[in-house]
Length: 297
Image 1 (cartoon, one colour):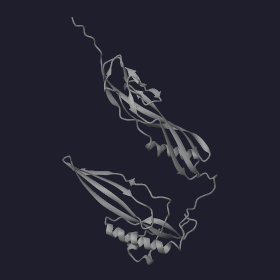
Image 2: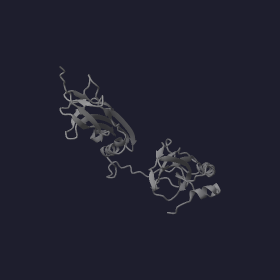
Image 3: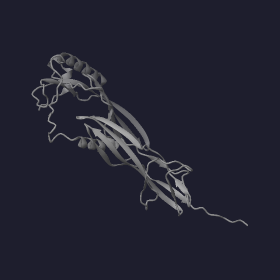
Image 4: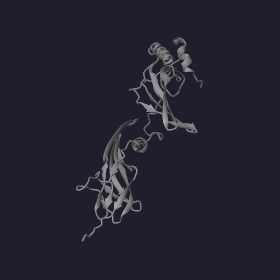
């Protein structure tokens, strides 16, 4: 397959362009790329990038790369703008589509010049206006056989959704043990900010999936002890606390909290249950003081 330099093509006369379009239902949400760190001696440079765009013919994709240079502890920041443009392309002889020749969407190569991006935008829009009435939008070739071994089941689709997307969206509880220490022989009450129920929904190739997740809290009051729980509340302070523990010896304890998640789901007339996900904050170190009595004569 021959690679086309779309920036060069768009800057030429639109009559010589072969361009493409996919018409999405809505604008895409902002996306952020990975960061990288480089540096020598006392200087560390962190490169990060982000983008925001709207998928329309000739639409400019605005993104940026931010460079932070830390020298002797002081940051020096520089933001470099990056632009590219959505451009239409005519596809012919491609078995991936059922109605070729047709139009799909591609993007030009990136530029740091907004003036050049503006010229690319004008050329892409002009090309789209000239090609839109001549070619239909490309329709992907999709197998309609529901018995195909390559078609994932509702359970497979939701399980993948659970273990990838939902896994990264579940809330992480935060907790403390007021007033920041415990006294031997008296209950220490854990107080947390948590969510015990979350609902997720997303569209799939076979319909809308709904996942209702439920969380339960578990506490390890000392690193040498087992987890206690589950607790179906976030915990309250004294005297109404629902998650408490009595320490018998003074010293310090490493207290850990985790929330285990299970869920019920529905998709395409099927339903089921899920589990196995955990969210957990960093543990805290809790001083434990003893209560002593003194007799004065």
